[in-house]
Length: 107
Length: 495
Image (spheres, each protein chain N blue to C red):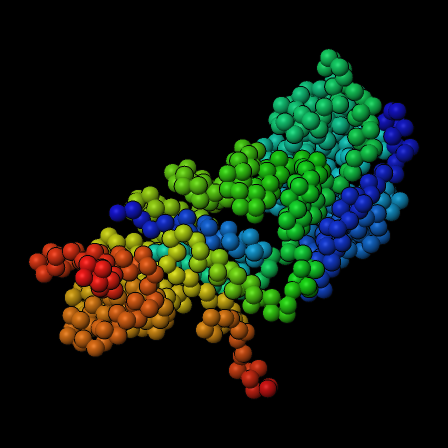
């Protein structure tokens, strides 16, 4: 029985991150048995042009995680995508900024 | 024009490149300024800002930013080198020479820390520009030791050629021929230096290059930065042009090809990026990053054995690079070389015991090879490291089932179903387990979840599996051709 194509999936997943200009230094990304795991801090590569960030909506990060997740799901052989990004949490089909207890008490 | 004439026109001509890359210049300036404001502790950002102002013909502002970079990190050699060029441009070459000389005097030679070949090159070429080629050559030869095979060897060779040619020495032609033979890019670059027939050296061309070219090879960094900025905007032709400028400035073939590889990789062209990464490795066989990128490209093109060869070499060059061992382990898994895969994944974990992905891959490998207890241990450690997914709970449940413990299996499946209710396989196995335990209502509910979550291919696979099992048990004759609705319609037509 051939092994799971985890390297091909990992390699394609990392290519997706590069195409979205994500700083891969602060993230770990890999596949186990066809399930892609993305963990760490999501931020743009320092080379990403600043004016594009400025022109994007304030929730650029939320759009970004959504777009990345959508692209990862379409990689051939992927069974599931687990996104565990610092400061963000999934609510149903969309992503929201995580409100820390300290921020809640300030409100 | 002789060497002394050259010295008379000592003020190097600034090439106003701003007009060539107005958009990218503005973007680069904005990006770097934003980064400098956000991260005032980044010396690299200050240095790049300095290079950008140098290119824009504002040497005073360049001096300021290079000095800021050095205030953050006094050991930052590239900033020390660039500060000299900016000082030269302010019209104070003596201060620039004194600065470079001070950096060289500070650098230990033959000690544990490396010397500063870049600064030695700066000073040697500055001496050449003011008509002291022989002195520059002596300095160059002294500092070239140990860099004959390194990635900057071509830069040393070019500067040696220029100084030899200016000094009127015969060896210049030999150095030039070796450079031209090293790469087609260099052949084009040096095309004008051989006069017709190749007998004599085109001395005016040498003097022109010495005078007109931008002597600051640290600019290769900023050209690369601009190239990748263009790439971010989807302008690949402009990006390629900037990388060409980076090569002309730095004479670093390995970096040039590696950056072009990255460019094509960003454009999604794995075949072309593989060609560039292979060229980067040919120019510098010790370039680990290029080997990793080439290995990944080859794997994406389904050339697994070739990809393995690249990762093996990267692992040999950097034995403590956990991610290389992890990726090599995955490649061996794909190639069904279990023992090699296990060795690499274990090495990745030895280097980085918290590497949860490597841990889970090792667990999968153990489970596939029938070593359930080891597999279970690794899965549990991966879970403790925060790697939670329905698939991991499913794998744990299957191990418990093989070990004859359906209770623990059901518990793992139930947790997995909570982690991701949309992961269809877990509901399927949960349904089967409930059915075996006689819990028909729960089995029905689980399968209903499975049918909601499953994709068509998964449903077909499971139905085929059911049909096979029932057929083997002699309770099922595979005669149903369509759905109940289709059959009713067919009966209606027949009636």
